Amino acid sequence: MRRALLLSCLCLTAVVYGQKFEGLAPTPPMGWNTWNTFGCDITEALIKETADAMIANGMQAAGYNYVVIDDCWESKQRDSQGNLVADPAKFPNGMKAVGDYLHSKGFRFGIHNCAGTRTCADYPGGRGHEYQDARTYASWGVDYLKYDWCNHGTANAQETYKTMRDALYAAGRPVVFALCEWGNNKPWEWGKEIGHLWRISGDIMDCYDCQGVYSTGWKYTLAADVGLEKYAGPDHWNDPDMMEVGNAGLSLAESRAHFTLWCMVAAPLIAGNDVRKMSPEIHDILTDKEVIAIDQDPLGKQGYQFMTHPSKEIWAKELSNGEWAVCFFNTGTEPLPLRISWSHLSFLSGPYQVRDVWQKKELGRTDTGEEFKVTVPSHDVVLVKLTPIK
Ligand code: GLA
Picture (cartoon, protein in one colour):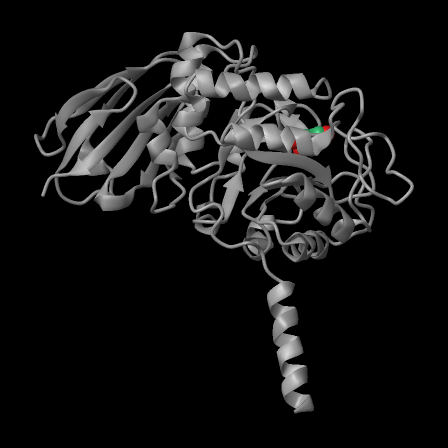
């Protein structure tokens, strides 16, 4: 009897603790995050206006359903009971009110904190308060937690993120857990059991190929994803960081290429521009259903770099139903005239129908013996989808 009791206690412990919420991210999460454009300059009004804009401009309908409030939403100190509190000037009605608003509009509510003692912008971090904070998030209706890695001291990354995973699970409200550990401890090797996505690099910057100390242009955060494709799949995604699409440091071509390549590597599509006032061209990039479908393909395979030359890269992504997406990326500064012999793409088998996904144009078949000729502008892409001909 005592043994049976002990066993059932152990089983219960295993159920209550020690797992992530399964099935929350069968395809890469999509949404919007405050950080890339607004940094610490965030308010309840901004969140509401953004959510309203995402409904009006079709982003929500295109699949962007998480609205994530990044660093700087908190007061500088916890309250006398150790609870996290919202900054009363920025969020005068508290965070539950923000969550209620988002939920009433059909969105899911995301929030940021940090596994260290303080966040990167020096607000209270979660260390030592994991279970208490997880209950707070549950009471606010939080659906997505981005968990950062500043001020972690000597903490072990895997153990620290595991603690928060268990705390979220114990609090009982399903939460997508986004590990933001910057790839320091190879989270692709252990993150699958802990979270639904993990950053693989330092921060993205609003530029194509610039380099700072902790942040770089998207070309380099993408480069960090090369070779990591085998670690990604439904419910566990590599995250080359939130998008800079539409921000001032990128040309239109660079925004289009950035978006396309994020879709090719099955990246979480978290927009980081001011979606209340984007140009029609950027709107059309972010909401292109055919390109998004490549990211969100249910097979859940991350695309890979098939070939790289000094100014040319070819990326391939296997899709369901035997289809493939192929992206020709001009990394150089001059227009790139391409002549592609389909037979050189060794991952293909049999004849395919070819469609130019951005141009919305059928390009014919792969088995005509003719080369595919196209000129790719500098820092731009040509994206084709290949559908097998039965
Ligand atoms: C880190 C993260 C960023 C952002 C900032 C906020 O740098 O990597 O994405 O959350 O913190 O301070």
